[in-house]
Length: 114
Length: 113
Image (tube, rainbow over all chains, first blue to last red; front, side, top):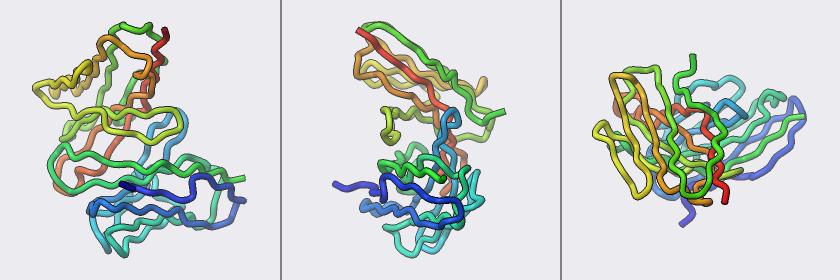
């Protein structure tokens, strides 16, 4: 019953450091995505993937890299952390189906860049 | 202009009240519409999809007006447990793009005794 699992739940980085946020799902969903949530901004799409080996940019991709080597995993890499990347990050997955497909979210990673 | 706009509130209502949230979207090609609920410091969870014919799930009623590009959510007989942020969400038309969700900034609801 794991669903979408994100690690870590909390992280503090220094400016310029790099790190990878992990996301794994056990529902065999084709579609996975990363969002960031900032106060007053709602969730914004960073990167998404429609299947293993296929990724594309969302609304706010700068400063982030992704890869999708397996159906289950979709890590998000911060190349050189900046204070502007302080945010709550959510990973989501869904199957590519009808028009009202539900997205399932992980519990989020709260990242602070100092 | 934001692609999906909501009144951020907050809405403070007593138990038993009826409360309505509104949302407008700018992309006329949008295909799918949802309301998600997000509890404080938690992940968003699907509350209900929204269909052109309108749909109801217990105390919750959602309406979609494609001509006006307007979505609404009505909550009747509010409960303390309804306190949360309600997110208006749209998705574009076309195959695998269904998962590319665009979120409003959310409307905060507090139900008090």
